[in-house]
Length: 162
Image (tube, rainbow, N blue to C red; front, side, top):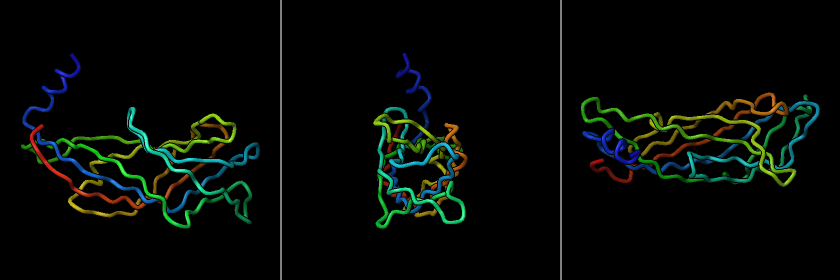
């Protein structure tokens, strides 16, 4: 029944397929006194689709040892393919939320420490590239604040009826 409902929602809409590439530049993380991050990864996901990258080692700053940054010497790239639906009357894409998650893998288990959602319709275009600073919401008491500097590239692949 869910697939029938989705088909009804897509009447009079066009489906546009885009390829988004995130090029990671810098991850800034502020931790508490009880925790020092060692093995982190950044995950980009929506429902069951998931791509991830490992983060270089966390280097605390001289001024405040609880704040630190992870800098990619060579930017790490992750690519996803997103289908956005456009209403023909308003000529605007529907919302599609993707989530960036910072995970701690020090104990062997994946523990989410911070998350941020971005709406992919804001970055969709025929061939655009934008520098984005993503502010994360802490999920753990270990993290005070986190930001990620990313270059988002968008490539239009094709368009058709939904």
